Image (cartoon, rainbow, N blue to C red; front, side):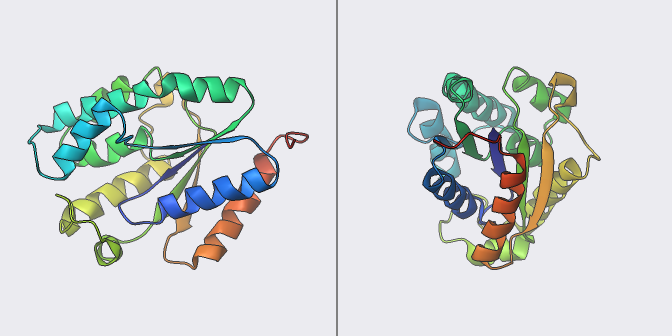
Length: 207
């Protein structure tokens, strides 16, 4: 099973992804957790420099870097899934559509960059308003105070969740989207995620 968490900044993606990882491991499942961007590899380090305002990159270059970062981990994801492990990703290809698409890059072109990826089984969208994101943020990067932009990103995510836009459908993406209110208590959200995951887990997968 391949699970992705998406949402605007500070929506609770990382918290819920790690809670899910911990819960599934406790149940005996083998789990691989990946956080995108992966700031440990050379591509991710360049992305970090951009976010920290240490380098300027146009929107298309950024989109290419984000896509390359995901491609860098493609073999790890494929290997884990082939071995029957559960893969959990904090962000994936949908972030490019939401963020770079909101900055003017064409969704069709953005989707083509990730056309050969493995697509997830389910996407949990942690949904919060932009003002909530800004209130929660502790790290100040170049998106730290852009409320209008974050609302646009949020709208793009919701459009993907409700099927208004399906950027990767032509490439075999049939992921199921589940929208969660990121303002609800952490434990309550986690319980809902666990119920949804348990409905989709293959029986006999625990070891």
